[in-house]
Length: 238
Ligand SMILES: Nc1ncnc2c1ncn2[C@@H]1O[C@H](COP(=O)(O)OP(=O)(O)O)[C@@H](O)[C@H]1O
Ligand SMILES: [Mg+2]
Image (cartoon, rainbow, N blue to C red):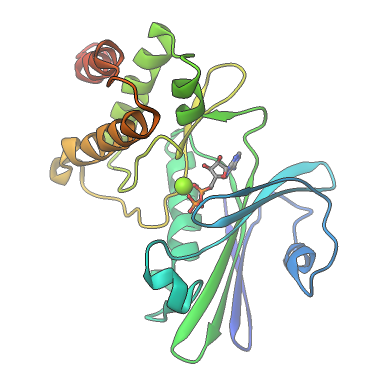
């Protein structure tokens, strides 16, 4: 999967050359408040818009800061070079992970616009269709043993290939209608050598996000389900 990088004055556009119909004009959908054919809009930390371009169902994300700092500089980040921008890291990370056979959405395009010492960034990926988050499935008790085992194996597959997810939480895991699991939101991911991976840190992060959800919704931590995930992670057979 080759990547084309187009530079115009202060902006950089990355395009996935596997998709022949995609050009930098894809970002025109998001300029000057043009009406976009978005089907659903969700707000997380970033602003995500679902839209259609030709035959493709796509998802557009604007990178935004979380926490208090967001109120001050919302979607601006300090420029320290193209390859250190969130969108570049996520686009290239997704591309590499896909090539390694890991289950992530296909990157379609990214745009980084420099403004003085800051930049703003966007990413477009192919939509994982008919998918729901792990959080949603947890909320409605829709977690079969098979699915939990698959999740343990999925986490393991990333670690095996030298990737950990620094922000593995219940909203960054998607499950499609055939119960395939995808990991999302890799804007800080960097490939690590397998031996350097602290397997537990993203697993612990994931556990904290389940605990947080349980606390909020007044339920007990799903101990049995958690054990099932860990057991299949540790299973030497995969
Ligand atoms: N390729 C995709 N296919 C389907 N849903 C997606 C896709 N990318 C993002 N989403 C949805 O949008 C939400 C936010 O996207 P994410 O990349 O996690 O950004 P952030 O958490 O920084 O706002 C996800 O939790 C998921 O529900
Ligand atoms: Mg997210």
